[in-house]
Structures are given as C-alpha cells and as structure tokens.
Length: 421
Image 1 (cartoon, rainbow, N blue to C red):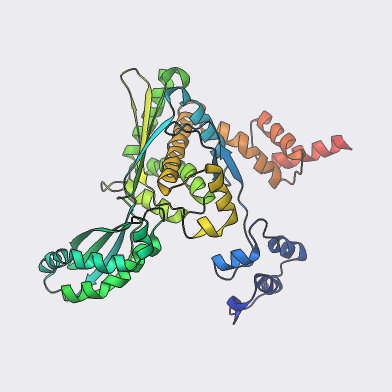
Image 2 (tube, rainbow, N blue to C red):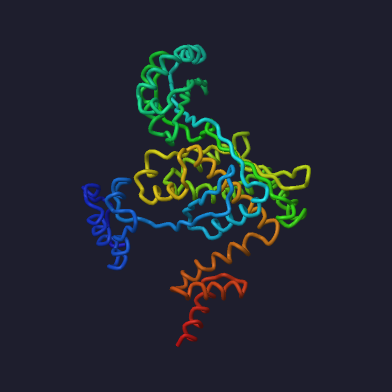
C-alpha cells in the first residue's frame, strides 16, 4: 500500500472511473489491475454507481442453471448465482432423483412483513399495550396513507401486535407487501406512525424498522425420494441419521443449514433479492425454539421411502431494488418466467430442499469431498495458472490422482505444457 490516509474529500462526488484512478494511484494497483476493474461487464458503470456508493468496479459471479426440477407440476429452469463448486450440479441431481414421485410440492403463507416500533419510558406498559391495541383502526389509517400504491395492489396494514419486553413496549405492524420484499414500505409505515404511538403510550419512540425474522411470510416444500432411486435402505437410514445429528447439535446444524442456503442464496442472488435478509431470517427461524436446529425435516413414509420438508421465511420480491435495477437480475427473472413473488418463493425453497438432500446423501455415502473436490478441481487448475483447454485436463489429472491441491495442479500444468512443446 502506498497510501497514508483514507481521507479523500469529495470522493463520493466523482465518477466510477475517476475514483478508480485515485484508488489505483494510492494503492499502487498496476495498469492491468486498473483496466480489469474498469471493465464492469454486463452491469454498466452508471447503473452500478446508482446502486451503491463509491463504486469503482463490479464483481462477476458465475450463473448456472439448475435443471430437472418439477415444482407443483411445472418445470422451471432456475438460474443460480454462486462461486461454490458442486452447488448447481447437486440441485440437478437431487431433482432428477425425485421426478418419478412428482418432484416438489409447495405452499406459502401471505406476504406479511413485520415493522417494529420501540417505545421506551412508558410508565405503565401493560396499560399502554391495551391502549395501543384499542387504536388499531387509527394506526391502520396512518400506515395505509403512507403507501397508496401498495393499497392499489391489494396490500397494506393487516394487523397489530403489542409486546412488553423488560419495560419497553414493542409494537409490531403486520403489513401485506404483495410482490415487494417490503422493507421500504414497512419502514415508512413505522416512521409515520411512531409519533402517534409515543403520544398514546406516554413514552418515547426509538427504533422504527422492519424485522428480518419474517415468520409470517413462510414458504414450505415437501418431496419424496423413492428408496430404490437413492441407493436403498442403508442410504436412506444414513440420511436420517445425518439429519438427526443436525437437529440435535448446533455445531452440525450450522453447516447443515449452510447447505440449504447454498441453494437458496444462489437463487436469491441471481434474482437481485437481498441475500442477507433471507439468510438472517432463516437462521433466526432455525433457533425459534430456543435452540438452533435443522431447517429441514427428514422421515421415512409407510413404504420406506425418504420424505423431506423445508419451511422457512422467504422475504423476496419482484419489484424494487436490484430486482429491477440490475439488468442481469431482470434476465434471470425472465428465464424463471415468474409473475409473482409468491411463485419465486416456492421455487427458492424447493431448491433449498434439493440442495440439502444432495448434501445429506453425499455425507451418508461417499463423503462430501469426492464429488465436491472433483468439481472444485477446475478452480484449483485456474489458481495454478491453467488456461483454456488446459483447465479441464489439469482438473482431470488431479481427480485421477485422488488429491486436489494447487501444488499438484502446478506440477500437472508444467508436465502438460512440456508435452505440448
């Protein structure tokens, strides 16, 4: 680093190209590095600059397409944006193995998001709680007036909850956000109604913001894998034992649920939705019993087949944010062909269950590394400097050797290039 200070007055007012030039000068970035960052690919620099602050470039993530899925009788092609090897392949394989049983069957609740208003300094919080519940109609009027467009689309304020937590009064506004993710709508309502809530309760309003524990906006999926198509009873029982381990032990559950989110987050990202919101809600939901547990549930039916279910919050939308601003996200939505946030949520949760099945089956049979590292070998080949057709050939050599390491990839590349000469 050649810079001595990160204080750059007026940096935010510059263009992305001007910012990049300054960063390159201050950090010692060479011309090749600067040119690389200046190429923003299929996201125009001006669009990127309107999405976040202090833009100097973009980071491209591979988009793969998951095939073989049947979801409620339909067969969508599902774009997935991820850098992790084996994720897309795992979904394809898991979906193929349950096609004969009809694939994935889904359900959703209403698209209800929660806005929280924190009231402090309330002298008689239990009395205030009932006073606020009495004001439900007035609260609805104030909230709905903040977003007439949402009302036109059939959404708006639906209900009110008031909780007392250690002397604080916490108001929940339950809002139907329709096809939006809903953060802006519910935050605006919380801001608008907070002064009245403070007046009626005799307290002072502080935090006014949505909750990412969107447990009123759930997506659910179920699927059956016939025992003959997954390798028999021993594989089924291995999956059930792996699930039981995850449901009892938070150390295992964290990785188990990360596997679910490998699929979920890849579709959320590809469609321009908020991965952090979905992930936060998922993990909070997994801990709703007071202990962090598996998001999925696995059982065997009366015929001995393996059945899996997944229920989780799914606050995704089709309007607003990057879903419309990002041109690649729009194209991914075009590929999916979804017309509602509800349908998108159903597809995402199905991918999550498929991903979890694939991970559990691998763990119960060959181990996670065999398939994962075989696909990861291409990444290692790239790290070793392989180019073009060299990538596949070096990867094949690593897999044949049974060890996927950068040093071995470098040796294989040297040998390959010697043969070419």
